[in-house]
Length: 221
Length: 221
DNA sequence: GACAAAACAGGACAACCGGTCTGTTTATAA
DNA sequence: TTATAAACAGACCGGTTGTCCTGTTTTGTC
Image (cartoon, rainbow over all chains, first blue to last red; front, side):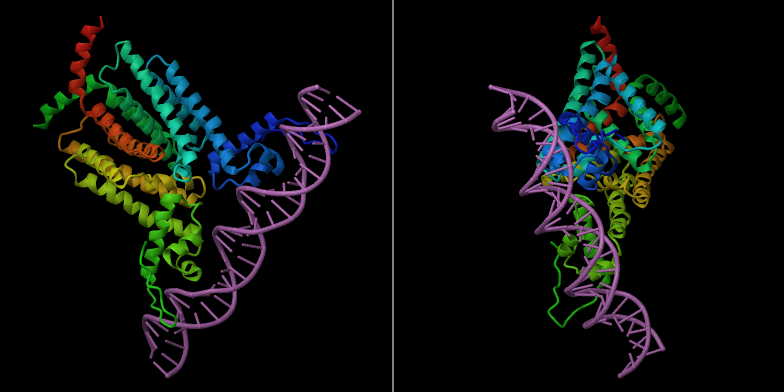
């Protein structure tokens, strides 16, 4: 995985930041792939090329390590894959669509689904420890708020007047989370596209829907 | 928790089915509250009042126990709380609404959120073992199919002509799963109602939406 | 260079985990 | 009753886990 400059006997170079980063890299990946409880510190140490003493120096407990992964890595992942793209998009719906499609494309390319980092840890740790729960809830909150803010920006531009920002944000986050959950379980990213299409059809094709409804009523009787 | 008829020395009554049920009860609850890896067989044995020999007789391995919980309990829970109510409802939307509201009411009544049994285990075990993944994926599939079938029934009754059954089913399941995930993390069931409202507003208020859109365009310029 | 603090090495340990094993008791059928 | 298998009891074991502890090396500061 990551290259570790194995010191020949007698030479050592202290690199606290680099070592800390390596540990976080490995922990993030292992928590994502195997979960918190199934990831042993021994495995992480071996994978990161780090001794017990060094690990304990930077992260006194396993919980401290997980908390750092959540606050520094999971939060950043949500920021990078969701918040920033939505903020940069021309509209909320464009942003949501682009994220769904980007994630689906990435999953299809890499061939398997590891799931959403936030949801993976949220399910395993929310009830295990109040500190975990608080940290994870904060990320969910920021995620939702970013989408709601984007809806409000749309509304100030004269769009989405009939959309409740908070509700839509909740729906978007829930749909994505649930879709990723199913995608992980079925190992098939198609459900992501199904959900996106259903989401868009439901909330934005009002005109087409009304036309069809009239036609159908003719045929129904 | 459950009453265990502790045998006085010399008297014992074999009750294989009852013992098996007690173990499954305890395992289901513990897997739900603490997760699979965080539940030790020792704890389960103590909680169920069962010895190691008895446990091993009915469930040779921890994996076998978990598989039984998934196939017998989690599947039944989805059937009971989702599939049956939706099938019994007058329409898909009524069914979905009633389930969301029933779950939200139950959560508010009991004061805290344990999360969705299926999603909890799906996140922790889907990547851990192919057998787990297959069993869990089957439950998701049945869940989705039941909703999709209900939509098709609606369509044969002349409704929901503009709804794609598969997509709507995926959206409903994903929204519920994701909402429960957030509810568990924030320990607040309000997000369930937010998602339900957003879901219903999005897919069923086409007429009202169109009216508002026209009015807004007047004001916008 | 002297010195203190930070960074790291690596072993030790006690608790715990899941599984196995042997033996005993209960139910079933002949 | 007797044989036969199922049901259960309870101790045991090898391996693992997270954490701690002592010691050594590097780094920064005066």
